[in-house]
Image (cartoon, rainbow over all chains, first blue to last red):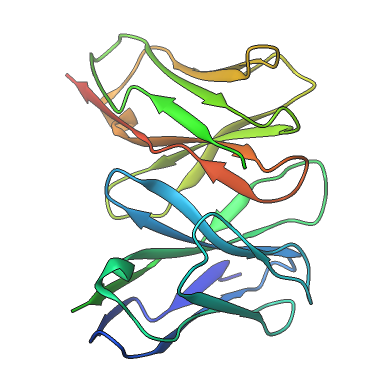
Length: 114
Length: 112
């Protein structure tokens, strides 16, 4: 199993450009999450999808949209990138059972907006 | 909404000493409290977690305690080793749901 994969690994955008960050998991997990990580700010939840067909806002959803394309894939879109969106973005997924709530993280995408 | 405060932000200890990191949460409905370790340039990984119906959990040198009344939980690492050096994050579930709110992290440095 590849676990949670993210593409691209690195990206540089100009202000106002748009892009989609891709995330996929092959562990048959129900729930998927998008976080951003900034120095000194920890991991902040952007959006999440508790199950296929549902999405919910997290702590910092402004400027982002998400799509739960199917059970495996959960994408994050920046419609008009701003320098404040420079960050490392992590995708995560979680098992459907109630024995463990562990979230498995992808390797991250480092995004710079100039 | 849920808020998680984590202290201290940095912690330096000598090899063999114990390290304690503390977190408080605001949502009394939270029922799951994990701790993640993140090494430089790597992804966060779960090291231990606790559910709200348990007061303490141990895994070798690592333990977590939970005080539901006071809404705080702590990570205890005994006999620290240089490889314990990393950033540690606590988190709390948003109510009884699947999403987590993370603290801002503690950078632990263990010197030999």
